[in-house]
Amino acid sequence: MLRKSLMAVLLLAVTALAACGGPKPAQGLLTEDEIGKLESLYLSDRDTALKGLGFSEKDLDTEGDGYEFLTSAGAYPLKSSRSIDGTDFRQILLTSVGSPEGLYGMYFQASFDTQEEAGAAREALISAVSELYGEPAYPDTQRWKAGEVTELALHQITGPGDNEGPYTLRLEYSVPAVVDGRRLSGEEIAEMVRSVQEKQ
Image 1 (cartoon, rainbow, N blue to C red):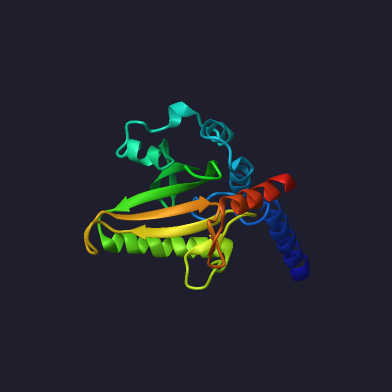
Image 2 (cartoon, rainbow, N blue to C red):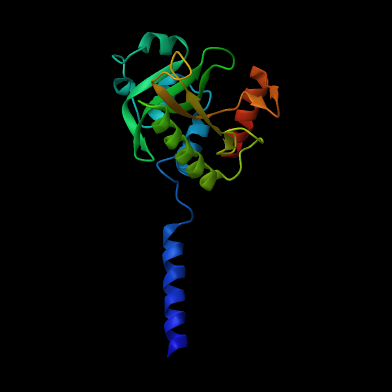
């Protein structure tokens, strides 16, 4: 009787795991499908990238702070935010203003009032990202391999002084410009992206 009960529990557990379809993204990080979509759109122009990601020009936050500065650097903020680890992060589409031109990633940015809040959020994100992607791509960095060609980097940005707010965290999903300590040329980046897109 006990053996039959144990077998039934095991069968139920296996069925439940199969229904889950494998590991789920932690804390609102990009899913495997979202990263795949991003990679299929790398080097696309802004409008093609927006459409491919399910947005349009009307979804751009043209009234937000620093819009002109951001867009001159190839960054386009969206009106909608994304909840990551329970915090709303501003979504920003990244395009290159140099060669190769086109989409090269997205970043998600949130500001905190105190250094303690930012530090706690950062530690929680490091834990969630490490659980999902494993060890960082390079020792002593906060850069993880998140897709075929996509790297996830975590940046903490402080205010004007070391101990002044606001304290900002940025999660950036993008094509890496530096690999194994060497800055890639535009041609190398384009070749790396296209070789991944050809496999899709």
